Amino acid sequence: MKKLIPAYVRVPLIFFAVFAAMEYFIDSGNRPAFIKFPMVSVFLFVFLFLLIAIEITLSAVDNITYHLLTEDQKAKLNEVNSLSFQDSEWYKKLIKSLTKSEPIENEGLLLLDHDYDGIKELDNNLPPWWVYLFYAGIIFGVVYMVRYEILGADNQETELKNELAQAKIEVAEYMKTAPDMMDEKTVTLLTEPTDLAAGKEIFATNCAACHRADAGGQIGPNLTDENWILGGGIKNVFHTLVNGGRDGKGMISWKGTLKPKEMQKVASYVLSLKGSNPIDPKAPDGEVWVDETAPKK
Image (cartoon, rainbow, N blue to C red; front, side):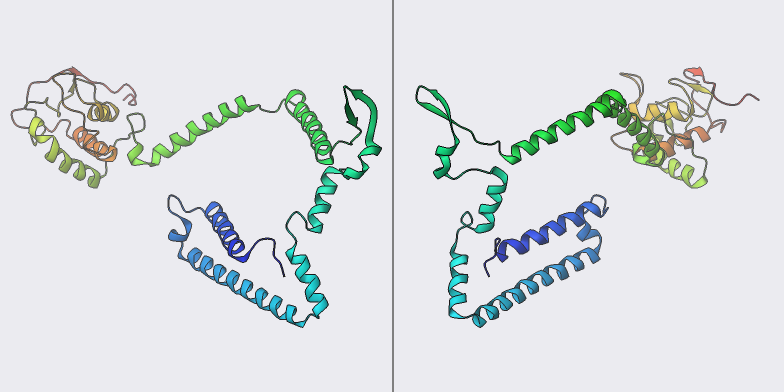
């Protein structure tokens, strides 16, 4: 039997349609679903195998059915299969239902009395597809007017503002639990011994050269007293680590070397050294910093 779409086109088309649907509906993060979930690959392989098996079976059935036909039936079938796409009966019926065009031989019956310098007018009906599209446009316009002008539904600008506001909320929630997205507004003080130990190791590797191993101060200021040049507290210290100190004479920015979580740990460790009284500390720099958000005693 003649098929509208050949098997070598139909099989890949169906397979990739199912493949795309699975990739769309299966949440696999930033990895393809068939890689993250091996069962998806197994299903796609079995599905492709079944598609090929079905095509082979249908082809065999068609071949057997053809050989069971009489010679007259074979001749009629061959004649139908030899017709082009536009000559097929169903295509002609489809075009007739969409256009309702009159045969060229009936043109004389459609001629109007109008004559413009030899140009005559035919009284053809509008194509049904055009009429249906026109009515659909009217219905759409009425629904649109009722929904947005009468009932006051959100328009595109309002929807955009609502989505942006919701996005800000979601970003803020995400940043609370995403260490690499942390900033001075969301950073919190760490007090767990494991975090402080990690902060101490980072401090010894990157900060001790300027602040001494005991943080008593050398090139850089003493970090154990109550005086701060750019403000104390976890948020200010974290901000200084990210952006660096004073222009021209302060410390460098560490955001290109340390991750936000690492800077949080080292800032928390530095704050834990307050009042540790190192030997021969450097004279205080800056001003005494008081946390105004701390509860009053």
